Length: 476
Image (tube, rainbow, N blue to C red; front, side, top):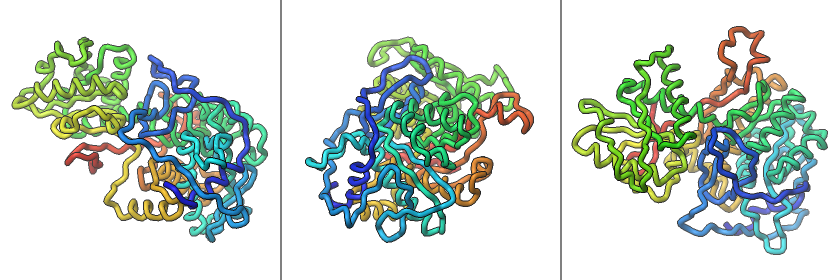
């Protein structure tokens, strides 16, 4: 990860100027609500936490991470990008100013004040924004090739609400924007969503899956599906193949875990089109608090003559998941075939014996998935490495896909792009875009939509199956 190809990003870091606050880890919360929080250490794969509305990162790594360093090239060759510059790639490897009719303001946590040119090291938490921005720049180049005329304004939020507010209220370019893209944290996303609602500027939130970023905001666009959408996607997959009486939902005896079950029960009723108590999923609340669940009896929940489907909506209690899957493997052996549905965080568990995933037919829902064997993915990786001298991570794909999709929308429909969103499905390297209006129950007319629209939400999720010792998409 060494080399001069990070130079454009290095100068970008040096050129952005805003204030900063010190960050700490996210607090725990026992409710499915959002908290006032700060940025996690961005140092590993992320795990969706519906309680905080954040993608938490795995902090225990099997290998030490590389430190990014680069060699400084002269500014005459690589002119810096400033936070007050409207820019769009010229196609010759440099960044130039162009006067496009439509503007996008991008707010990302670069932490420019924590970059020290003497050592050439990038602050750990800057990596998320750098990767996202790198993917975005590639999308800008592609938009240029397609003839789009757009202006991009990029700002460093430092990850704080204070700085985010300062940027929104002090930069005239943002008030004249047709779209705000970013930021990362739910707490900062709320600030942007409120600003967008007041000023009637669509706010595109690329990462936060929180369902309470803003109350009844027709200018809020969430790219990452909420927890409710995960429940609906799993239930749709299960009920399209199995009867309700084959399904058992499992959680430990904790209030916040038990509360999550209702999302799945409601999704089941929605799938059936009616509230039928006889078709309610069976619930298995594990009272055993021992580390190995030694007193837990799974046998009574297994179906003798047909497959049993276990849905376990536990995301960060790896010990519970591991212990339950071990018990399930023993209980079902030679008796009943099973299929398990878990949460996307399970993909990043490190203590699990992955043979359990294979033997128990594990499925998870996730907004992100790439096919490593796809030629498009191989081409993207190659191009990314040639430009930046490092491999793309998840944020690079999200930055590329989000910028390309919304850039095309804005270029095609102009200032009216938001009204076209729910009919403009799209496909990216890592996901699909299927945005729909989320409205209050009982909304029956177009006249009511403005006051009852909660947000636009991308409701597409991959269903991934662990097979042949890797996760692969289940084809519909």
